[in-house]
Image 1 (spheres, one colour):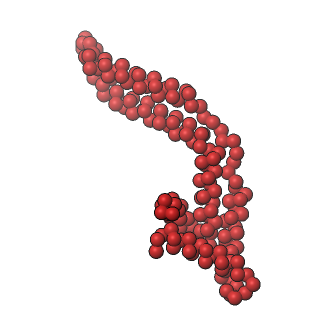
Image 2 (tube, rainbow, N blue to C red):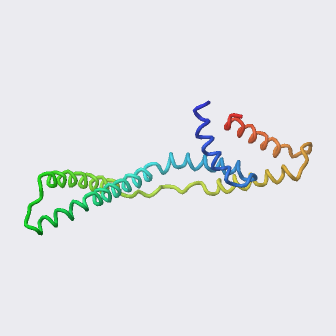
Length: 164
């Protein structure tokens, strides 16, 4: 179970930024969104990340070749020819840029087939708030023991994740 503790702690730290009344709902929302991303949005996200990486490679090579371009331009204006190192570097950069362009073209933007379950997410957050409200408006020995049981389970989960 130690393997699950780290991702659970990461999601719990995000949920801690919200008011205490909605923390269980936010945590479950994050779990649902993570599952949705892994099942429905994995391919589109992969394509976007790959396209951004290709653009970053283009930008980086462009910035790295800018000083060399200025030096070679000044050298040609003086009647000289570029050196063999400059020619070899230009060919290598051209191959890398062609590879990045091919990868960019081979991975077009893909639309996500389904939207995330926003109704379920909103329902979880509202239910968490209502449960918190019931917890503070009713004494523990009343008929509404479900609210107290839910918050006790949440407290046990938080202590398990934090290891204390």
